[in-house]
Amino acid sequence: MTDAPAKGPDEKFCSECAAVISSRAEICPKCGVRQMAPPASISLGATTPNGKSRVSAAILAFFLGGLGVHKFYLGQVGWGVIYLLFCWTFIPSIVAFVEFILLLTMSDEYFNHRFGRS
Ligand SMILES: [Zn+2]
Image (cartoon, rainbow, N blue to C red; front, top):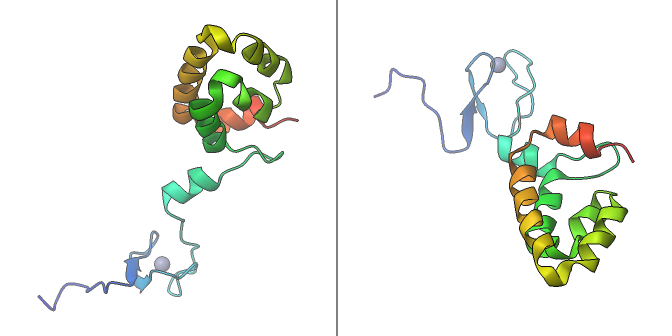
């Protein structure tokens, strides 16, 4: 039980050299490699150069997509107005739900490419 490298509750393995380091360490003291943040916080915190967030857009599409709010958020004001005008038909709600799925599943790179330019 004691011959394997022990990892305490507030420790983690370095992503580069697998040394046991503090879970709060940003840079491994052994090999000097910067530790990667958990994937969840990368995708949640990721924004395009003009401040758009893929996850925020997806959340808007899910809750307010029928009103085109995510379109306004993404700078596609013309589409936002169309969604607003036709919101009573519920068609925008259906389209927005599809867009919600697309926004959730698309890569940050693609999102940046498509919506990152203001
Ligand atoms: Zn290391």
